[in-house]
Image 1 (cartoon, rainbow, N blue to C red):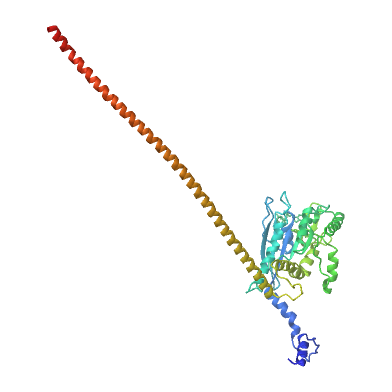
Image 2 (image 1 turned 45 degrees about the vertical axis):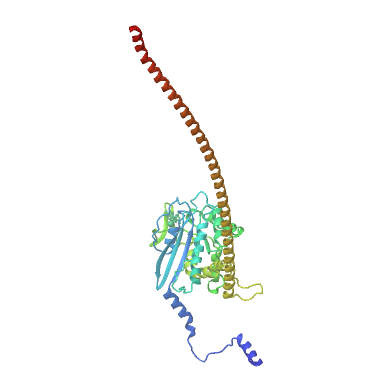
Length: 430
Ligand code: GTP
Ligand code: MG
């Protein structure tokens, strides 16, 4: 390549963008509209995780937030451990479709030993990240119609004690804060007085800061919402009241909780922060929550997971990351490891065979010795029996001789006695 070509090539490789003014209307100013229309057709998914003690008002708040009745049965107080129960609903408002998943941490805080209460929640969040990662790593991915189940926000329900956060709350929030956007809320805020609530909020925020728990901050970098988000950040944690009842106030039916001494209106900002929560969660920051989940929490999970698998952005000489090189290196590493393992197993097998052979030989020798010993005993026995037989034979012979002599004597005696009377008769006659 000629020197001038090379110069031109290197110039083209990193060209400076030039500003041009258009002669007329082209049409790419409709790009945002195309994006909106595509997103509307595709629909959205939003996943909320509710963490809080049994009966703290999770289901009621969800019903109040989305102004509907989700069919959820009351959770048992006798679960052995925390169980995550996801339920998905298809909602529609105007022409926007929302696939809403509400995940309930059933049985949270019910166990005597609460050391591991956070684990099923962490595992569930990780499992959703893992599913997404697996889909991304597939050869044939279908992320377009993939049902994204990653948790976009965790509403952490704080018991309105008026004192301080429980250690279970602090531990759980600390374990979750790098995995999900946490919005802490004080539940059943109608059970705590106004002055106590103010102090309680300050105490909670102080405890969260001193324990290094990172909660979700409404973003203030977008001018359009910076002001309202900054104001709302100062109101955290929101103190909320939930209700599915409608009560007549003036001539209007409003969602409220009616008590003998008065009515707590859910949507009255003097009574609670429900409206603030709904504004922040749904109307203003839903997209930011989705984006933060993808760009911050999922990214962190993905990075750790890929690093665990041996992938790295750059090597020692800060070369750019190459998937193929890393894959080749990993493959080589894996094959040599496999070979090493195979060799180790082969050696182990040979040693085992040798050991067994030796054992068998030893056994054979022992058996042989045993056989020889038994043979000797047998011969000895045989010899003794033979001796006994001979002795017996001799005794039998002697006995037979004696018997014959006896018989001879007996017959002689018999003969003699039979001769005697004849002789007497003869004598008498004579
Ligand atoms: P589980 O699903 O069983 O864990 O309960 P949950 O956390 O979903 O609570 P749920 O919404 O079923 O409410 C439990 C009880 O608390 C019900 O009697 C509700 O009426 C009541 N409740 C809910 N929200 C509030 C509230 O803001 N203030 C008061 N005072 N009571 C509430
Ligand atoms: Mg419930």
